[in-house]
Image 1 (cartoon, rainbow, N blue to C red):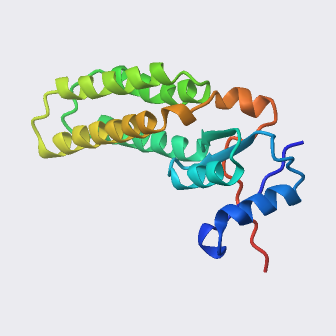
Image 2: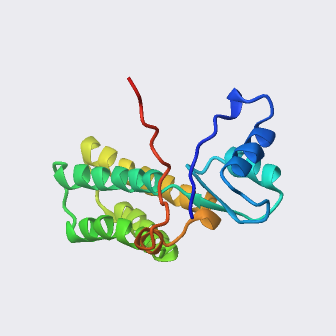
Length: 179
């Protein structure tokens, strides 16, 4: 059975000991694999590795991946709406639309290729006005940001669709607020 809980690192005197205690309370036997879902910040996975001294799987939270894709989609929309845009809209719309699908299905290398192609196609546009140059710069910057994020967290990327269909977590659980 899968159990989930969160940890606020600065709230405990010894976060690693607190984590081991909480895992044991949840029925962890000291040998079972622990999965960490994070936004890509290495502090949490490293803390868990120190605490459990056993098998730990780190997964990048889908929500954080998806938000970065959304930034690209928005930048492409802005580019296509810019005055003086003279390119073929399909060269920009289609890649931006399919990027999320490839990442959801664990096809990271294809997504990386799409990001590079989008960047190259932006460079080929004749940006004669400031508005168009700014729109091109935004698309390129968002593509580079996502590419770097994926590169820095490559080992933590998974087939999110497969995990989701099998009832496994793909996002950081949201804390429920009580009044």
